[in-house]
Length: 322
Image (cartoon, rainbow, N blue to C red; front, side):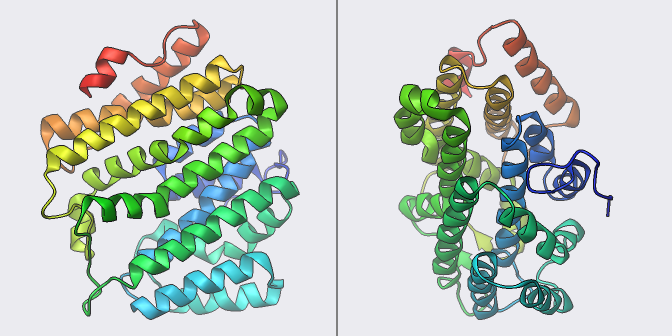
């Protein structure tokens, strides 16, 4: 584990340590979260790690459905009320019987007491939003875990079930991020764009999640998760994802036109641009396709140039065809 940086964030979390966890658990967010200004960088970094922990419980194919739900409910209680000894004991029990094989996720799970400690030292308003939305997501995950069959297989049957699932694991995250952005941006951002951002926040999250589902369809199926409904045409999923990503572009432009910090705009722009490019790749080369590192680097450079030159972040015609 990387040692604490001398440049600690507002929670006492070292920048180096947060970044190390991001690198081991999400290449995308390891790239985009450092773009944010403080205190958002630390708040959203910690929020991501907390959501990654509950995602690990949701995806715990080595555990029974009952054990996965118990862990989700226990984590919710630990985050809000437990003392350090109780947190440490719970983590020891989880890591003795690893829920997944991914080494980065397991290392993060072992460090959960530190991540919870960082969260508790955040600004109270930001901490409240993170905990409220995390708890909503954990409860929703429990509902989907209950739907698994005797072999632990989750199979979504309708477009509405797919959208409900995306809301639980990503739409709620979009709502949380929006509240953190508005808190950070102060009265001006709230007054000029708060309502419009909130109106698009769930669609932004849904779009990113649909792209992830299309990209990871093979790996998910191998672990007993079939998110794409059998009786829904794949073209319908692509149409929904494209509409969602148009909303994501509108969301980002609202931030920009409202005078939000450039790093905040860059964070949202690059997440949206990566999803748009991946969706196009999935359409052209088939499910499971992924962007190369050089393509990701190129998109990051394009976003930086557009912000520096005050140029458009999204080509409308390109977005319509993505």
